[in-house]
Image (cartoon, rainbow, N blue to C red; front, side, top):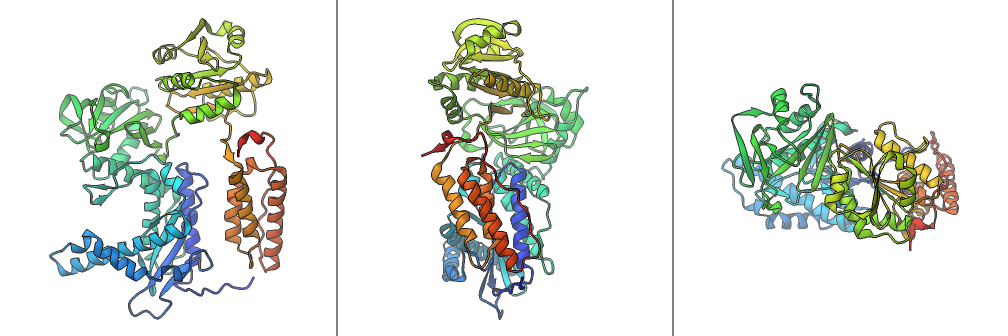
Length: 579
């Protein structure tokens, strides 16, 4: 293959560096639980004063963005700078004044670049401050689909005291940290890769989110709260794992009822002492009060707490190295042995209703949601078993359950009966037939050895129930708060969405010359939705892959990657497609 000549030249390894950023960001997002995010990364260089090269360069130069798109960049950036309150700030030292206003102007350039990219590509872009590389000031721009940001639990405030920016979510934190690492790597001679591991990026994002919560609470932690919580969650007390909660709040406790205040607060680095105090707390009762630096008492959030203030946060320690950061009902991040993830989303009524409407003839969505919501609060976990053969199943399992007269349980009732071991058996109308049900079933290949007995017994029961012709949905609540809705049915998508993915791949495959990056980006999108493909589409996708490599090798490609051919999923049917 002929060596590629860089027309819009900034430095020799710019194309390798951009791919490195794309990979690091994709892997970091994957680590926190964001799949198929498909970031778009651009390097945009503006010529320094006195430079002799292209006035504006873009990497990749054969992508959807061209220099002409930024024809008004200087004018727009200057307008944004002049409209910003920052432009009117004065600093006593002349050198400091010049440096700060250079930064303010750079931020205006970044905002102007974002405006162009957002409109042109219909993505949500974040743009770094520039780093000088040879004769260009290089901005790194990262674009993600809007759903990636919108779907992450997040804070509503964007800045502390309307000035200092905060990390709003784990996703925002990952993007910001990746861009920060880009800037650091670009300072090195001939930069060819971002020098940060994906796990380090995700950890830094979680730390920034935790510190942002502390700042909104009105405290300054010195950056030690995140690691302090990791140690607390892994430290036993008298051979017991730590389970409890802390409230992150300022010591003025404006929105907290403080029932007990320590004369000598306990520092978050005093792990063993803090772990002992954790025994006095509970998730639904009194919590340890901390300002992020010390634990200073016991108390609980006031009933009239204005959530819009975002000034009191809950830190729930679930034991075995796990803890979570919450604000109100929003679970902002879950951390296990120091590795952060987006929390598994709590059950939504739309999801439960969608599944039940697909399996049962006339489910009572309102009644089932009330039972599911109450069951999800079970402190020690439970199972809500919804079966269209509930009456027969209760009789069959009578020796390993407590049979009850058919009853419509209230939310309070479901909380009572989930206090004992076993599941609650109801029909699609929400009528209860048995409590304390121990499920049976034959072992299957669908089990998960990383999960507990409750999960695997539910999987076995579902397989056996299906063989008996009984339609069943199980709401599984684990002791650590994880919620699963079984069977794990892929969500329904629109037929047009599926077909558009294949069309995009077809168009990418037809490009001349062969554009490997464009083709593989389109292929990965199709691969992620392979479950929904018809036999005809599977055959076309596999043919396009074969043809792509024939053309690519003919153009001089020396190494071929072999992809496993896609296959039609036997579970797929027309019910998964929406018109």
